[in-house]
Amino acid sequence: MNKFKFIYLFVMFAFVSMVHSQSMGIDTDTPRATLDVQGNLSVRNLIRVTTPNAALSTDGAVGNSGTVLVSRGPNNPPEWKLIRRPNFNPFYYTIFNNEGAETQAGVDLPGSGTLSGNEIHAENQTLASYTQSGSNTVGYEITALAKTFQIDVATNNIVVLSLETIAQSGSSTVNNAVDFSCGIFVDDQLKGIRVYTLSQTGGGSPFYTYNLIATATGLSAGNHTAKVACKRRANINYTGSFSVGKAVPGATNLNDFMAKSSLTIQTYEKPPATNSIPVYN
Image 1: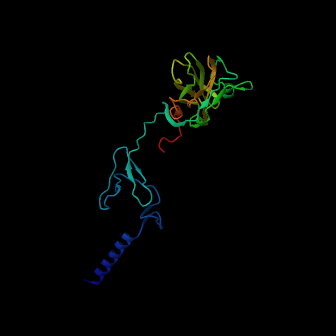
Image 2 (image 1 turned 120 degrees about the horizontal axis):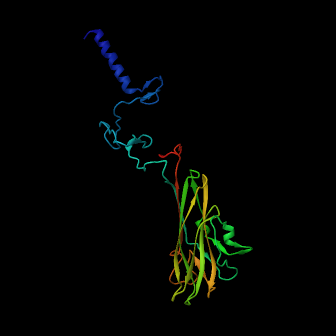
Image 3 (image 1 turned 90 degrees about the horizontal axis):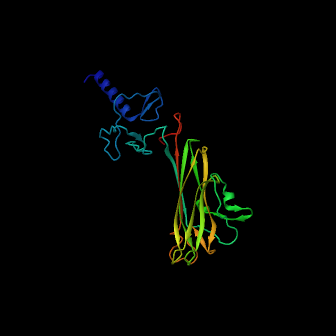
């Protein structure tokens, strides 16, 4: 082997060793990774990614149509993932937020003192006017059901609020009854109400499963608060115990767990065509 061939082979060996042991930079003299590209990158064919737990000698996966590369954290290769999100259409309402609350801490509605009677209610009546009659308290909030929810898109929104609870009377005499109501409030304004007369038809302490669905529309963007309140409207031959969201004292056919209340909130919003809220998080 002549001297020039030896020198050539030595230089090639040194170059290959350097390439294998050092990082390579494009448009940079100080690469910060094995391959550091300081500029635009154009890929005209496949991107292959070694799948988790696969041998390093494998070619890697190219992903399927609709998949995206997702990071698996430091020291782990990324992997192809299919993000299962519904198609986004700015002209249809989409569920943006869900909230819920439940409690066994219901309210006792006393039968003595001032009752509201056959009161007529209107949308956006204030919570204070529902629970108070002059200086007298006639209604009570189920405070543990108060829930804050968020609106992202102003005006173009519908909020659906669902209440389920149990009302129970302590009466044991036939034809005794209590007339009551419960309302759902958003930002202390009435959005839905139902009245019901619970009668004793014979035996035990009668109870009733009470359901109410209310809606609020056109709310401003930001946080809002939903609340629930109930009141005893009238007595029919009975002024004894009456409870909503809990068992009456001494009941043997119901307990607080069975009578607990729940409130669920779903916000439907219609983003404008110029929507800037990200669809993919």
